[in-house]
Image 1 (cartoon, rainbow, N blue to C red):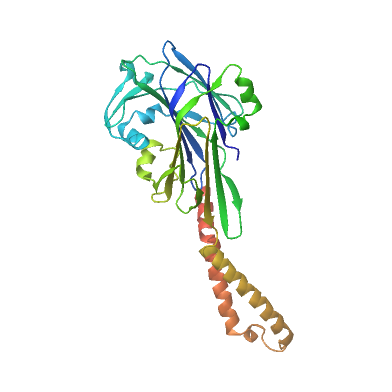
Image 2 (image 1 turned 30 degrees about the horizontal axis):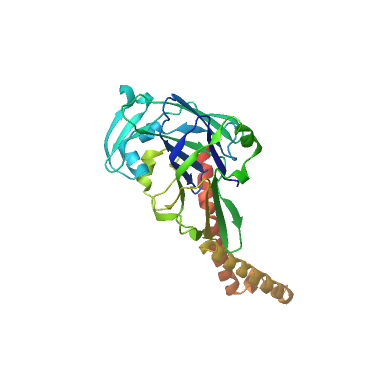
Length: 336
């Protein structure tokens, strides 16, 4: 999948932190979160942003995460800091929320409810300058639901499946035509720090990562993040996911390349191989018996007990592999 992203603005804006977080959840479509931290330029009351993502299509769901981030417990995990206090902007959290952290500067979480997909691959949104005292940095975060099982390039092999994540931000050599046309009125934002996070099943193994950029790998606190995104994470199970944390700074463009692998030879594959071996043995055996059967005797009594034992083992393997009782139960539940 092409994961070349571009963030542009009509006004000159310097972004201090840009967050990209991909979520790959087993048995569920993936989604991506994007967060932008910046200072509002002086004498500018509104910033016009454009964000280009090649996989975005008209009809995809995008939502602002202000309501999630205004809650202290959620922001504690997202910003990795304790929230001392939170207060609505202009006494109404429809305008945003100011978070007062223990170890870092205050942050004004702004609404971005006017997000639109102007065309395939291009998102537009505007942010108004909040009426707050002091030079407080602003932050906006939104989520894009993607009609795909993964943001990675997936390559299946005999013994393992490989997942390639190639996240690129503001690389001029990958500039698509529609973004190149935009640069007549907009400019690529200068980004001080870029954070790239991947939430993946912990059954994945890390095969390659840039050690200079990777900062941390840990098991995801599922119960806490389910409070943050209850709808999107309803299929996620406790202890089944991990998060890989990457960071890079002070470049004009950013690139994060990571390879994960998942072993595909497991208990099911072993059972299938055993079952296939039994079937082949039975077929060869029956071909020999067929030529030696006595037509005057009972056919069933001429079949050796070993063949019956192998057939029973084969039946058990079929039940373990395909679980027909679960299929019948699901069919029954749907009908009733």
